[in-house]
Structures are given as C-alpha cells and as structure tokens.
Amino acid sequence: MDRFPPAADASSRLQLLRQELKAQGLDAFLVSMADEFRSEYVPPSARRIQFLTGFTGSAGFLIVTGGKAAFFTDGRYTLQASQQIGDGAFGLFDSADRTPSAWLEENAWPGMKIGFDPWLHTAAEIENFQKTLAKKDAALVPVERNPVDAVWTDRPTPPLAKIFAHEGLFAGKPSAEKRLEIAKDLMKSGVNAAVLTDPASIAWLLNVRGGDAPHAPLPFSYAIVRNDATVEWFADRQKLTDGLETHLGNGVFRHGMEDFPEALRRLAESRSLVRIDTSVTPFRIADALEKAGASIDRGLDPCALPKACKNLVELDGMRAAHRRDGAALVKFLAWLDRLDDPASVTEVQAGEKLAALRAEGAHYRGPSFDTIAAAGSHGAIVHYRATRLSDRPLEADSLFLIDSGAQYLDGTTDVTRTVVIGKPSAEMIDRYTRVLKGHIALASVRFPEGTTGADLDALARQFLWEAGLDYNHGTGHGVGSYLGVHEGPQSLSRRSTTPLKPGMVLSNEPGFYKEGSYGIRLENLQAVVERLEIGAPERKMLGFETLTLAPFDRRPIDPAMLTGSERAWLNAYHARVFEAIRPLVDEKTVSWLKSATREVY
Image (cartoon, rainbow, N blue to C red; front, side, top):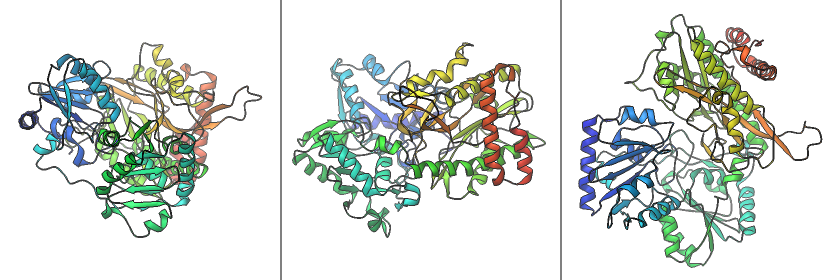
C-alpha cells in the first residue's frame, strides 16, 4: 500500500481487533512487525502493523489493550511514525526511551492475559516479556489464530515464488563444501543438529535463491542441518523448480512445510543436542522442541558468520556489481546536474530514473530496498519513502538525498549521495563537511583483529560531536552477497559486539538530519580486508576496502575544514572512481564525471 489508512480507518480497525480479543478471552495483544521467517522486508500478507496503523517503516511494535494502543519504533522512524499514525488512536514511543517491556510493566495488572502469535516472536523476545510480566502476575498466552488476521478480511495471499539454483560462478563455493564446514563446527561444539529459520542462512547454505521477500532473493523455508553434513529442507513444494534436486546433490532431503512439526518432534525424541539461535528462532519452534524433550544449545546461527565472511569469488562479484552500479549512479547524477529546472522533476521521477539506469546493467535483478528519494525537509526523515501523496519537486537552494541499491546475481549494493540543488547555505556546507570527515575517518581507519563495530562507531560521529550534533541510527550495517541488503551479525554501531573479520561487507553511512529542513547522509559499502602494508605489526591489522564507486558532491564541501590526509583520501577516491567508471559511460557523462571528480585543494 502506498497510502496509509486515514484516522477513521485506523480507529475502526482497532475497534474490530478489540472485539476479536474479547472473543478470544484476551485482555491485550502483541502485534509484531515480523513474519514467521523474520524477514526485514515482510511480504504484503504479513504487514499487520501497516494494516492497523498505516505505518510503512520496517521497524515497529504495537501493543493493543481494551483501552490503549501503544506504538514503538526507533530513532530512524519516529518522525515518519508521527506523521503516519499521529491521529490520537495510538500512543507513540521511541523505543530508546520506552521499551514495550517497560510499557507493559507499567500498564499490566494481575491476572491479565496478553496474547501473542508464537510464530511472529522469537524465543528470546518472549522470554524477556515473561520475566517482566511475572512481576505483575500477568500471563502471556500463545494464540492459534492471529486476531489481526481474523479481522483482516482482504489480506493478500502469502508469496509462492519459485526457488532456483544460485550457480557456483556467483556463489564461489559448492553447497556440499559449506555443509561439511558447518557440520565440523557443530561436531566441534558437541551439537548434533541445528534448526535454521533464517531464509538467508538456508539460501546461502544450499546455494539457492527465490523471491518470497520484497527486495531480497530469498525463498521462505526452514531447515535442519546435522553434524553428518546432511540437511532436511522444508519448503512449499509448489516453489521447487526442475533441476533443483540435481543442483542440491546428495545429502539434502526435501520436504513440504507441513512435515516440519513432525521433524521437530523426531529430532527432540532422538535426545539430540539441538542448536537454536533464540534471537531469530520463532517461539513456537523453541517451545515445541523443549516440550518434546530436546536438549537445547543456545548459540549463534551456525551459518551467520561463514555467510558474512565473503569468499574470494563473492568479493570479486561485489566489486563487479559495484562498478556497474556506480556507472548507473554516475549517469543519474550527471543527468540530474544537467537539468535546466530541477523543479521539473519530482522525488518519484528521480527514483524511477535511477532504477531504469540500473536495470540496463548485467545481472540486475531489482532494487535491494525501496529507494529513498528525499527533497528538502523530507531528507530529515531517515527512512522516508516518496508516495503519490507525499511526492514533491526537487527544491531550489536545498539538498536532495537519494539512498538506493540493487540486487545483482553477483552482489548487492547500497549507496547514498546527498547533492545540492541550487546554492547551499553555510550551515549545510558545515554539516555536510562534518559528515564527510566522519565518513573518511571510518573508511581509512586501521584496526587490530578482534575489533568490533562498537569500537569504531565514534570515529564517524566525532566531527558532529564537536559541534554538539549527532544522528539517531547506526553508522553501518552488514550486507549480503545477492542476499539481504541488511545482514548480521556484523555492524558498525554502539551496540555491535561481533569482531570484524576479513570478507565482511558493511556500509559506512554517517549522517545529519535537521527536522523540517534537510537531511545529509553519505554512504559507501566497504569490505573488511587484511592490511599487509603495515610494517612489522605486533598484531594482525585490518582495514576497509571501499567498494562503492560514485563521486561525492564537491559543492557543499568546505576544503578549509579538511585536513591534508582527508583531502588526499577524497582525491584518491575520486581518481579511482573516474578510472573505474570512465569506460562504462558515454562521452558526455565522462565529461561530467571528470569535473565531478577533480581534485579538492
């Protein structure tokens, strides 16, 4: 839905939901943003919060009682949420200030029955709620039928996209080799089997891709991988394609989704030690295993780290994808800069233009997320999405922020550029340059093995902090290889605890947002690499290789604010962009690119 429901619709839907809660004997219900596969971008059939509230962001949580409705989101979406659901029917909370657990502790009463869908909440999430509600003598009640679904009469059908092989040309390693490595890790840990519920992990392990999730080539499925390197794979049989069995080879046993509960029961009764990642595993699965007598090993999804550390073929694919992606973005930026009247183009039109240019590239399979094309004050909404209702022309003497990416067979891209339309103000120049300095600091850092994203996050913020400024999102997220544009466990944020390892790909995207005025974000993707040029280091040293190839707008840069080393980095990066992209674009664009990448003194 591009259009969110008006206040009257939201209020009436809440009323219908409350009637259903009463019919099911519930005093409240937890409405999750998630689907049963924990997809970041859930399919239309699972957008229950959007159905109830009109909120179109990707992070949110809703608690509905007989008299209250509390909506929670994070700093990326608080402004957007206030605009989309600020009709009085919902209380709006920033989850950094008030968590759903804290709200329940304040509002629950003894004997209260709070329903939840056990497929849509992780085991860890429910355990945390249970600890909180035990203090109030209130109970969580798993429901067999989601009450939101009961009142959602025109709910879209769940996706059934075909599953296809991801060839070794792009995957770089056979599935059998991956399965053997995972089996050895399980054996080393004394674990008999692991239940995989993350579609990205299963797609990576089996070298398959699909199309069930928007913007990510993922087939929805579950799997059980054992320490003998065999896999039981559970997917809707309608999605399987010819030749897939040959691609999978020996050791992968295909089942329908309806066979999964029985397989869990057999696994539990075998008295196996079973690994589950409680941060992603639905409560229903963990509960079924425990009730059937399984011994549970709580640990990280065994595919998470191997998937995050790209092999050499995947890294080369990411580099190639970024060259083609950079060419499309450079063509777009040149087109934008040559417009006689920028106001003749709207946000939606700009996004469509860039998408069309990307589609001309080899191996293109679609966007990796909804493009954020934000003119003027819309740029201050971190995850803004232009719709037919919000669409506006590019504004004179303002900033235009465009955050976009693509899925290619050989890689996934995500890049943000902020460009000047007309003449920037002195404040815009100052803020832009501070963000750029933070980006350069992070891009050029060297760090010892064992360093986490939390150790590096402040590097990108330091120049904003000097002026009493900051931004309310992480500095960088992991990125998959023709998988999800947001991938864990690696990240660059205050809360990151995962050591960075060679082969990991992360974004570098500091920003600044002035509500009601403008937004700035400068984002490149970068791969963690070993730094061998450091002479006689006492420890193994790592750094970043920038993958994204597109110029930063020079017009809002204040050269006087840059140090000599910062200017050297920027000029070297722009020289690299010019040499890499020049052969891929027409002569008219080459002329623009030469000017856009000239040295900053």
